[in-house]
Image (cartoon, rainbow, N blue to C red):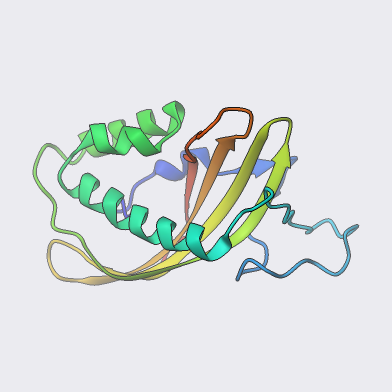
Length: 167
């Protein structure tokens, strides 16, 4: 979600001191599992990468529209509470005006997947282009970190972190 040069990446995702940038495309596995740059790719059983990424692109657009319209209730549906509060604070800096950022195109790739103690975590790398309120085009280069509780039936994926990778 383009947060108009937001600092919402204050919750950048790191685990064990490792930043997850990994391989793209959702199918590659690092050759050397002992490598300190190893990125986990352990998908939940029955996980459909294509369907998930199609949904992720749709959710990216939904959240951008919610951001533009200052629809915090819609944003809350997708966010972990800690990240939601960061985004509320960031959006407040922009006031209540409706923004006109438009997604020109966005693609998504799965760059990390991990399971542990009843939860699954994935990272999705979004790349594309958007047009801001002044019709200036900017790149989209973000990684969203999501978590889903596996021991709760029909649990939703919640966004825990947004890592803006810069222009």
